[in-house]
Length: 257
Image 1 (cartoon, one colour):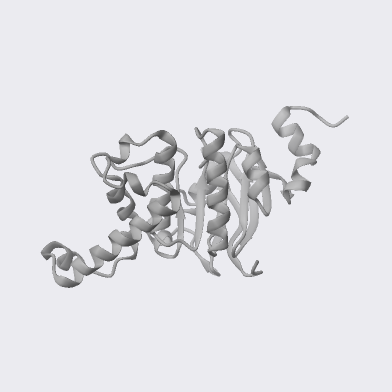
Image 2 (cartoon, helix red, strand yellow):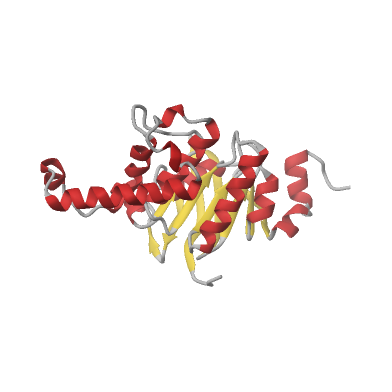
């Protein structure tokens, strides 16, 4: 694994009406790493993702992507810089096929302008063919290529999760932020997701994952950050985190003896 830092979070605080949803959160993510962000409900995990991806601007602190500050950048600007996210709630486009949903992700990488796309000029048609091929590749990666022509919203829940991941991959991310990707999956589907994430890491994609499924987290993560009430209470390898008294107390409500 490279020692290069791709994402740096420095003392991020986010206030809502004077209440701290996040307080002085700091950590770094190295290229090729799988970093997990865990914690009980209400710990601030999704708020953190929203700050990292430009949905929220932090009250204080800085976020750096590939050495450049992205604090205050719009989500679309962050996407073009190579950091892509999925959402806890599935967000597919109704009335669009599976392949069309996946192709949406490719358009952040298109070179053709609006006019050429509108007029269907030769360069635009070539690019659309390339986008179609790239989108089909991502559907194959997640195992739903045979459903390419179906309406995306007609897929089973687990396959919809995979489609959202395929759409994110179509944007050719360098770093992928996954918000509860195993939510609603059965054990078999969760196992398939684990295998897929390991393969993505082998391809050089860095992953930051927010997840409640501890079996998945402990099985694939290199490093884990634990939040509780918006603060970092632990950080370390899966082995360290599983035996940390503060983590046990936060999840189980059991204090140290």
